Length: 224
Image (tube, rainbow, N blue to C red; front, top):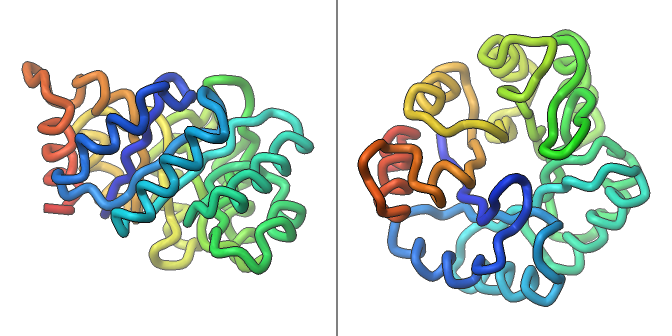
């Protein structure tokens, strides 16, 4: 299992994302991401270009609420040239926007609501969405397992693993402890996203270095 370090707090990209990226290039982390809110498009482009230049994988996660805003976010992702777009539920429309670009799409199964985002829907309904997304040719899914209101998180990850193609199961949101990292790895996640726990140095108690936090997370995820 791998993890993508997002330069975000509370579902928004932080203003010093470019400076932070420079700090983490020597950690072994090879996946970096941001949200489509919090900073201007010029900053997002500079960050996407820096990730590309470092030969790492870039991610953008949609946090827009309306269908129109989600489609606009997909257009921005394509313009930025990010490698993977996470989130949104307008699969056919966003797929059409991304067709012919290098941006792979990982939609959100279930019903993401609010900000910070929570996930509504039963386990069965969410897994059915995962299967439908695979049938539509999506690269994977962006599963908000620990923000689910009507499903047990680890059961949800394991059930999604049964229908999502290898390499495609991304788990996002509220994964900030070693126990949760190990649990989702055992349940079958391919990659997870994290922001606050590393940037705010809360993943490993008593360690004030975000770089060391990231290295510890890599070890726990199996990346080192």
